[in-house]
Amino acid sequence: MYERIRRGEERQSKRDRSLLPHIIGVIVLSAILVIPFFNMGRAMYRYQTFKQDLAESMAFAEHQGIISQDDADRFYTMIVDAGMGKPQREVPGSDGTRYEFGDGSTLELWPVDIDGDAENPGTLIRYTRSDGDVFCYDTDRIDYLLAIDTLSVG
Image (cartoon, rainbow, N blue to C red; front, side, top):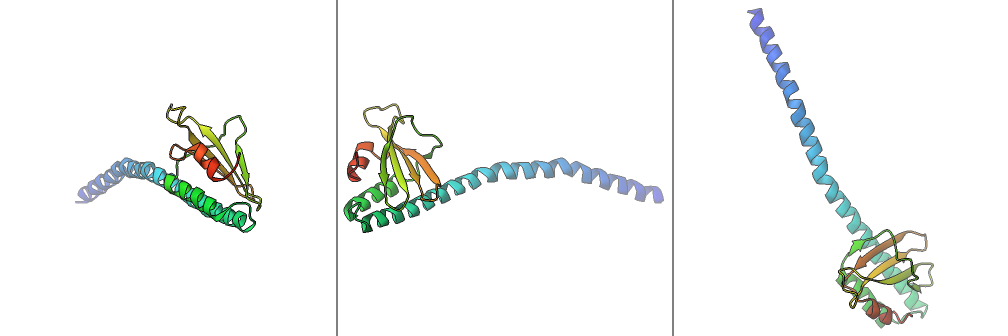
């Protein structure tokens, strides 16, 4: 009778050990699935923060008479309509078109060949807040020449 009980205990512990690889697999798979969503959420948060900070800088520049309300509205609408674009870490070696808002923040624009179409360049945008935080991305949805014309720069 005691042998049956002991064998039952052995079977139970073997079952517990056989579940361990499955549990580890589920944890690893969950991490693989969650990390991309976390990164996407973080990128969206940074983009939303960029839009808010840019709007505040443009409002400051407008209040200081640096930019007209129409130009500020047109450029901001371009940014919003274009969407998030592709985050970038580096900028071209050449100087970009630089715009200072008067509150310590800056906006720099570069023409970039995104899809191999040199005649219709996209725009690389780098916004630097007054505290030094940088948001940089490129998009093929904003025409470089139209952007700098809207800002009356260059």
